[in-house]
Each structure stands twice: as C-alpha cells, then as structure tokens.
Amino acid sequence: MTERGKEVQRMKKELPIMDEKQAKSDKDYSIYFQPPSLKDAKKRGKEDISVHYESAIPDDMKAIGVGKRYFIRTYGCQMNEHDTEVMKGMLEDMGFESTEDKLEADMILLNTCAIRENAEDKVFGELGHLKTLKQEKPGLILGVCGCMSQEESVVNRIMKKHAFVDIIFGTHNIHRLPMLLKEAYYSKEMVVEVWSKEGDIIENLPKKREGMKAWVNIMYGCDKFCTYCIVPYTRGKERSRRPQDVLAEIRDLARQGFKEITLLGQNVNAYGKDFTDLAYSFGDLMDDVRKIDIPRIRFTTSHPRDFDDRLIDVLAKRGNLVEHIHLPVQSGSTEVLKRMSRKYSREHYLELVDKIRQAIPDAMLTTDIIVGFPGETEEQFQETLSLVRQVRYDSAYTFSYSPRDGTPAASMDDNVPEDVKKDRLKRLNDLMTQIGREQNELLRGQTVEVLVEGESKTNPDVLSGRTRTNKLVLFQGSKELSGQFVHVTITEPQTWVLKGQLVTAQPAKVV
Ligand code: SF4
Picture 1 (spheres, rainbow, N blue to C red):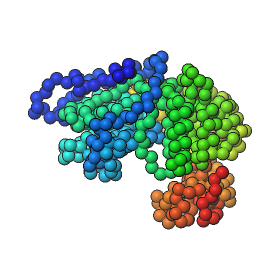
Picture 2: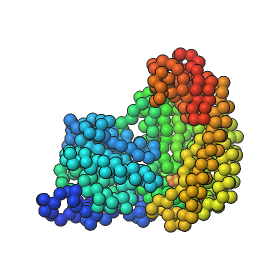
Picture 3: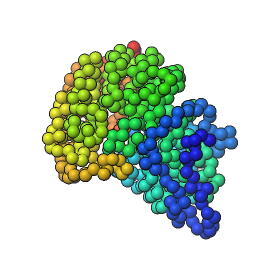
Picture 4: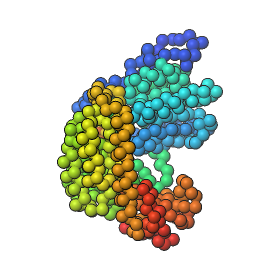
C-alpha cells in the first residue's frame, strides 16, 4: 500500500461488536468514522504522483457480478460522466450487466456532483426513494460516490440519516470499486472509503464507451482555488497523465472508429505544468493529437489565465481541432474577478479573446457566468453585460450565486438579495438569447458539416446532429446516416437550434 493508501479511513474496522438485532439502518455510523477533511484536501503536498498500469480487477472478482445487473445514475459534469464510464467498464469486467430499470438492479450507484446545493438536494431526494427499494430488496447494494462523497458534511449526513447505504467512496479511489464491492457483499456493515487527498494516476482502467463520441481525461484535479468552487477540494491537486498514455488511448479510439473526442480536465490549459522531467504543455499535446486520425477533437474546460500563445497557434492549424472554445469568464468586472480569485482581469480576458479571434476568425466562444457574487454592485453587473455584448458568445451557462459550504466565498457576506440575483440572471439570459439568435442568423444559407447523432428526441422523422462548433442541427434524412458526417444547408436558424436541408444523401468526406 502506498503512503497515500494509508490515508484511507475505514469505518468498518473501528466498529465494535453489535447486537445482532440492531438493524443496520438504525445505526448512526458517523460515531465510528472520521470523515474526509476539506482542510486536508486543500493541502498541496510535494509527493510525486506515481502512475500504475496493473489491472484493477483481481482474479477472484472477475465473475462476482455474473447474473447480476447494475444501474448508475450520474449527476453533474462530463468528468463525472467519464468516471461513470470507468465504473461501468469495471463492473462489466466483473460480469455485471447494465439495466436502465432501477427495480431490476442488484446494485445501484449514485455518482454525485457537489458543485451546487440543488445538485446535492437531488441526491438526497433520490436516496429517500431508494430506501423503500432497499427495504423491499435487502440484497440490493446501494452506493454513493463522486464529488459529494468527498465532503465531510455529506458523509456525516449519510452515515447518520441514510444508514441503509452500503458503500460510500470518493473521486480519488474509483479504481477500488471491485474491492469495496467485495467487502460490501461479505460484510453486514457500511463500507466507507474516502481519501481526503488525491491518489496516484491509475492507467488501463476498463471503460464502457457508447456511441461515436468519447471523453478522454488528460489530467485530474485543480489548483486554481476560485473562491466559490469546491472542485479543488473534491478532486485534489492537478495531476497530468503522461503524454504517451493519453496519445495511446486516443490512437486506440481512432482504431475503434470513434468520430469525436473531448479532452477532459478541470483546467486543461494547466496540462503538463506538474511534470518535473519534461517540458510539454497542453499546446504540445493538442499538436500531437492533431496528427491522429480522429475527425473532431474538442477540449473542456479551459481557464483564461493559462490559455497561452502556443495553444492558440496550434488551434489555428485547425484540421480536426474544432473552432469552438469554451472560455469561462464568470464576471466582466475586474473587482468581482479579484474576489472570485480568478487571477485575470477583464482587460486580460478581452485581450485573449482578441488574440483568439485574430488567429481563428470564425472561432465560436461559449462561457460560464455567475451573477450576484458577494458584493457585486449593479455597476459591476453592467460590466458583465457589456463584456457579453463585446465578445458576443454563442451561448453561456449562467448561474445565480449560491454559497458552497467549505469554500472561501461561503464566509463572505452573501449580500446581493435573492430578487436582485434573479433579476440580473433574467437580464443576462435575455441578452444571451438575443445574441445567440443573431449569431445563428449569420449561418442562414451557409452549408455546414454535421456529425449525425440519430433521430431528434422530439421528432423521429427528423435527424439531429452537431456542427464542428457544437451547434444542434435538425434536418430530414435517412436514419442510416447516423454516425456519419453530412453537409447541411441552414435554412431556418432559431435561437438554440439550426434547421436545415441535407445537401446530398451521401455521407460527407471529412478532411
Ligand atoms: S478553475 Fe476555478 S472554477 Fe474551475 S475547477 Fe478550478 S477552482 Fe473550480
């Protein structure tokens, strides 16, 4: 076991012998367990990160799931979606089969998100429903994992009030799922294993990918510590995967015929900054990925502070590197950005946008914005609106600020009244709608390359697909075009969707 492995806190070992009649669900497990510490999670140690290539599934676990079904509910971001793919891969390597019906599942996992309070409320709501299912089916294994499990308050709450849960584990040890499952099967107690600090990098974990698009993690964690954000605590310090491992995974996906890859990280622009033995940046990685035969390459999420000229130069080479950049700004006011600890100013952000637009004139920009951050004045909010008008984003994820326990902003005075936050959010959304509509109007009459995803969710007679800039396109065509690239002429641009006509019934050749 590594040094970090010793940080594992196991409630099970601490438990005294209990009266057999004492039902598991009556217990308050929190009295036996030291929960993960956000304070420890904040510390950035100097230990080297090791990379492990051995198999995560022990031989005696390879058939434990035969005849059993699993159901995973995923909340939150693409990072969580990708973690779910890894857990599905491990479960299927142990013989489990997936099901979309909770009622027929032998194991249910909730892969949770901690970014906003309402995401947490949803998970506790779901646990309430699952309690009944667990009572009807005592053999059901119920697990909670993901970012919420990294929070001490959440782990305490589950142990106190939801003792019917069988396993709790965090984001740093999903590779331990087979071992935790084994313990849950052979133990009558709740199995809790949450590491306060990040572990090593585990390669070669099986992944169950579906469809034509794949996510590839290039790094883990975040060291930016924006004051409103819980991620640096729940995901640990920045650790980059070795370039040869990332490139090998992408080459393999190319061999399997995947059409689109999204490189994932909390702050992809910081990729490689933690290497002590080689100088290799995110721009270098993109330059190497560009040479692999995958039609489309995206990345998310980038931080404006680390977005350097090398990366812009590489993106300008285009090819399979698409012209869509998600560049979260959060606020247009330098004062607010300072309180958010974003480490760039309004001017720096706008300069960066100019540089990107000079190098890639048709680059489509999207962003994230928070309104009503502590101390935000009407004037500062107006600076956000003016920045949005200047940049002309095609779309944005917009949020009204709410404090997250354990973050520095949670101890600031949350002094923007709720009705003012609501009003600002509405004004921002109205502006985004207007600009989004105008941006889409520019595409009227243009022919765009579309990757066909399948039937539209709302109309089976219509196909839906995405442009290189990730815009949704609807058009009529044969279902056999699913998974292919086609050309579509935009005839009816709307605010959030582009309607068009197929140029030819044949798949398009992508260069
Ligand atoms: S860059 Fe900031 S907002 Fe993004 S994950 Fe890191 S701390 Fe959170």
